Image 1 (spheres, one colour):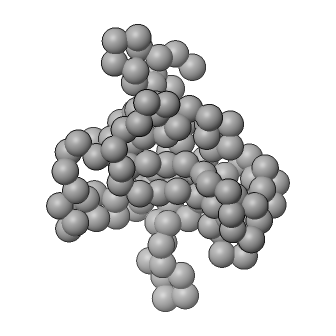
Image 2 (tube, rainbow, N blue to C red):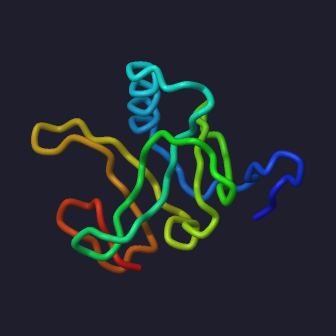
Length: 120
């Protein structure tokens, strides 16, 4: 993976988003009037029934973040989280029984029933 020294923007994208996920992210961005200075943070935090939980929220860029763009969406990720998230795909489901973002993570050794926490 290479970083441009001038812009600190990734040239290889560590996570991907389905078309449905991108549509929902853009809808939320507009509906909530998210300012252009914010990016979509993708990350992990300790907790959840399997040990780690996913983070997906609009936030300011921090010093240890990498930045990349996917179809106009500014995405932020702490450099240390790539170990857990590289190759992950984020989807969005709108079914009767389930609605929300779904994380398809090839690095997860175990996931909980709801799919929002994992262990690596």
